[in-house]
Image (cartoon, rainbow, N blue to C red; front, top):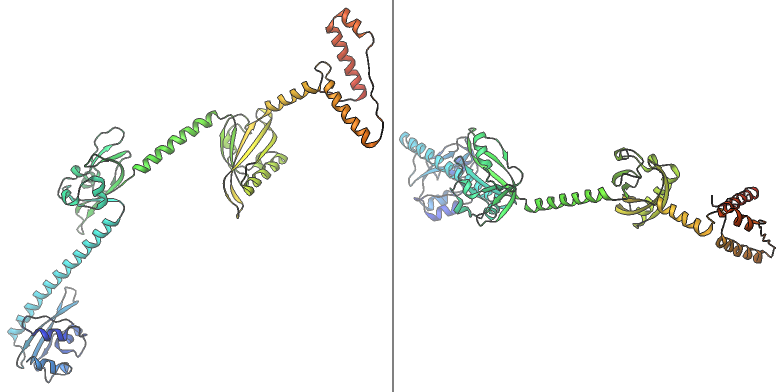
Length: 454
């Protein structure tokens, strides 16, 4: 309980400050507790004042009439008390006068409390708006600025005090980023429709100092309890960096598509189960007419078992070690049988869970293999007879000599010649000689079961 009154001694008011209300706490404490009017005509004899009689007597207070001050919903705000220096009860006129004063006090206290609540809400709103990372501008139904938070001040270049009362278009100047055409602000649309509106893509805000920000925003109506429009709240944010990042990502994607279109190799992304997740690069070397047919399939489902097992072993080793792996394999693809060299690299992995993703670059090395075979044939076999040439003969002879020495055994070397071959070659021509030589060698090889280059 806190007391105040210009006609009461100050020390008396200080003495009763902080006293808890209750059923026997003088006139005011009891009235505040019960919510009912309390009339004490003689303080020194009334039981409600038993604990405060000496205090009242000290200040010459003999009677006290206290009436609770209530709100419209009957909540007690305080009490209105009348003290008298001599014992006595109020007459009807005095009670009516007290009643009028109580009502006036109630109205005044409710107004003060309402103002305090409004101020508190305003303070809370200001703290909230000033703390959020988005820019906020509030306007009235005439489209004039009523509030800017600090982020909005930064982006628009206007201080709140300067912007207050100005038309929004002076403070919030927006254009199309690409065409540079001035745009109408969404607040006008909200005022007309009463609905939430947003900005179109590629919108830029031109600040008071000429700085430009790409922004994204929305505007919403502020509706009163009566359903009428009170204003509009505009919330926007600087997305310049996000747009720049998106443009960079788009450019990188276009570059990747361009590289993908000319890439001679096939690129795959597999998970730990060997599932085809992504496919890049050349169309040749595909297992299906449409690469989309591979998506979702596993290596085991799309490729012959033996090759699939080798590929899965490489995928698991790549995920386990985190190192690139290489493998050669053959597949019967749409273009026929081809040799491939597969190289792997880790995209992502969870060692503990044994999961992850692997890139697999498949290079067609069929031509390389054919070239190697042709080189080997030219190096070790005679092009006419298809039999081993002198180089291979010396290589095999050296090998056999080592075997003989190691095992202490014998070996034989047989020379064969064609009689009169030179005469035939000179008289009938080299083509006939070559044909005869090839035929005789082939019969000899077939009869003896010797190997040839074919």
